[in-house]
Length: 359
Image (cartoon, rainbow, N blue to C red; front, side):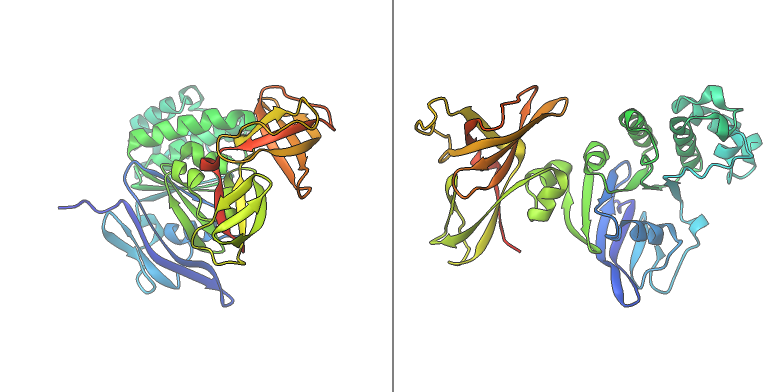
């Protein structure tokens, strides 16, 4: 017999004032899996999370945990009986309780009956020595670890996390994310994480649910969303992009890099050709007006450097093409700072270029 998914969300909808905020959202999360609702502010991520938690009610659709329905438009299991844990960005620790009581809060019998579980969790988040401390005595990162221990103490089948790392110093985030992910995997909890940061989603998620205007526009493994985006907006959400626009003639579109195949597009249709900055290759125009170098997949475009900046791990170089005066950006590992006015040839990998209907 097939085991049902740990969390199963089916055709969830929610509208406010007649405007849909969550629109036919469906997805599944397996036990031990981390799924990420990713999208810009106002796209419906947090509303979806609130409905699953039971603090808001959907207009239609239903939610199941381990195959058991916990709510639809008419039936609703109370939040405290859903076996769903919550973790928010403000940590919500009780300032008048020591760490041990914060973690044990809500457990039957409190710390006295659950001391071993509390101590074990605190040790696993490297907070055992702070068991008697109060929240105001802890740093932001330490409070986050305590909040995680408290969320996991009741052994929830599903853990909902709403921007849990946004309040942390950027230098702490990567380490704490990794520690959190390791502990969640150990517990076998199904995790639904809400964030607007693509880097966080890519780092933590087994699957990403990309939301826009209340709908999931694409879902899958981080690798697939990055390398096979569904549209220009999806490509641009995960990294900076260069966009060339063109018009189709005979299934071909002219660009400074030569013609691109655009099969299936009618003549006269406008298209966006999307190139990530790291996929532009550079070569100096040493002869000033010399012939273009041989490109692997098409024509090289001659361009003028307008600005170059060092960003730490890489350099960002801005160009203006001779043909069409198009502004393009390229990233180069390490230090590469050609002076403004330098002429260069730009080449690209066509297997890393995306072509989408303009719109």
